[in-house]
Image 1 (cartoon, rainbow, N blue to C red):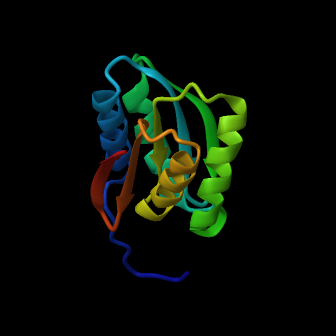
Image 2: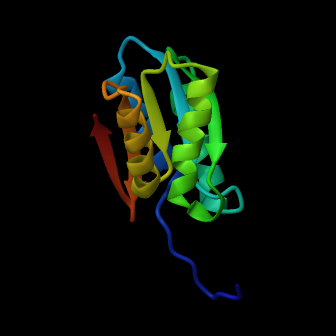
Length: 131
């Protein structure tokens, strides 16, 4: 894309806020999944960097990471199912946006795991969701 100006939010800060929200929601720590947006989106790299920095030294451990090509929300549900094959001992899920989070919540509910914490972001506004 040929652009003269590109304005965005501080994506790394968004990742930091998401990490901090999960740490606050899960004070005893535990395992979490990270369901990110498209691997070709530069913003995703920045969010992931901020999220990982926020988790440094915490008791939260990312045990499954997935990327959703073209931000397809349906892929988030698939990734949560794949993560559940790794372990069901999870306290939370970080999602790259609210659409991805909605699919994570759906799969968690279908598996009767509604006590988990899920967070996502949409249009520059952070939305921690507790289910």
